[in-house]
Length: 114
Length: 112
Image 1 (cartoon, one colour):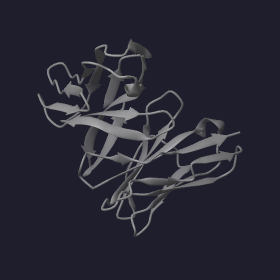
Image 2 (cartoon, each protein chain N blue to C red; image 1 turned 30 degrees about the horizontal axis):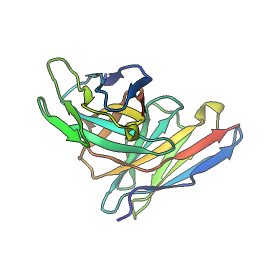
Image 3 (spheres, each protein chain N blue to C red; image 1 turned 120 degrees about the vertical axis):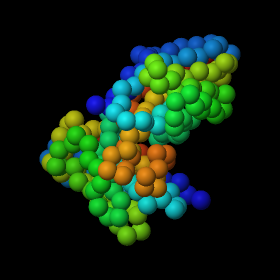
Image 4 (cartoon, one colour; image 1 turned 120 degrees about the horizontal axis):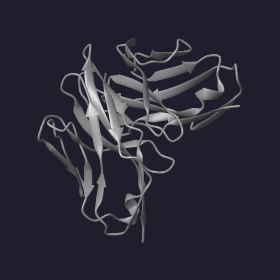
């Protein structure tokens, strides 16, 4: 089956620290991979995506590389800010019968302190 | 350009009741998916609608049903509510056969 496993949270960092959130996946076929972010009281926002092996997705200083050999898509940021405090979800998209559905990990809560 | 909108924002129901949640997709999108997000968990796929038909369904009982209208908007209906149905219900829109989905702010359902 298709599944996503994320690093357990919560994660607490000081401002300007380096961030890594680990994500590994199991999938049949060739999934697209995503990171979504959810700020308190809001829906999900797409942070970045990668559609094939060795692709790097990047946005707002966040990066993740699609590693097929290790079935991973780890999220990194070199210097976090207080405004990055949110819950981060790793997800994969698998086509089935011509349509796509998202499979999410459980989420990792990040708190950045000043 | 309005993004995905959902109504209502919050809803409180009692066990056994029925509820209808509504979603308007992002302009230009033809496909609507619904997800259930329990507290502290990732979203779980309920089903997806395209051309007014259910295209895919997740592991949810028949109490969960949906509809898509000719203008692409959608409804999620849940019958015989259980306490465990309390969750944030997210609607996402996309174009068929594309992998990028845009989410609405969600409807918070509380079942007492």
